[in-house]
Length: 316
Image 1 (cartoon, rainbow, N blue to C red):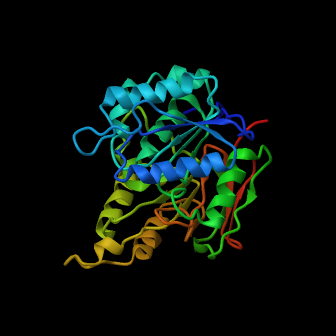
Image 2: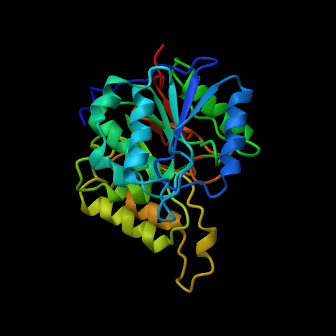
């Protein structure tokens, strides 16, 4: 990706139409998506549900690859749709990459929100088009029940404000693992999905970027393996700063494998990062989370420590 070709979507206006697609797994509980849609409508937004968004195929995909792809293309092509929200993550986004018409996306830049498995789509979109997308809260996950107030406030601010987003103020303190200061474009997402793109034409350049990662239900040795893969592929020494979020390892505690503290792995990998390394970012598979704009200039300082978005995520 040429870091000079960033495209910002237009900010979300009141009463705009939000399209909802399911590029990964099907809805385990469709009622959750219904409640998420009701939440969006209660704020005055109109919602257009993708034709295939409620389908299920082979148990773990929300429709065939062709059906999920058709919804994605249709929502980007539809001029009445101002933003596209992915209903949930799961698995399946990477199956679409080789079939996406990225020119449709480039010609119709708009807000695109996903999380977790959708990292594959978001990083591919950044690499192929330069479009800023958002990784964070989702309709059938975070908006279905009580939307965490902190998460809600940050989510709407990121999507609706065309002003620089400024300092990240979070309820738990960031931890400085390695000293330094750096500024670079933010590359953010799920660590396992990011690693799965290495060696493909969909992997964005990590050169001089600020890398923010999280994951869920992964044993520490697997997280170690993924960071080591990034290192062996030459990427960890490229990044200007590393931010780590939540690891949500509750479901790994019952294993017979000794569960090492992930912070120890982060300290080890920090030796290879040329700039600051901060942990404890409020980003991950937890109710309280930041929605991060992938692709915008971000400043990281171990003094404080502090993360600052030095520009807006959207345009006027």
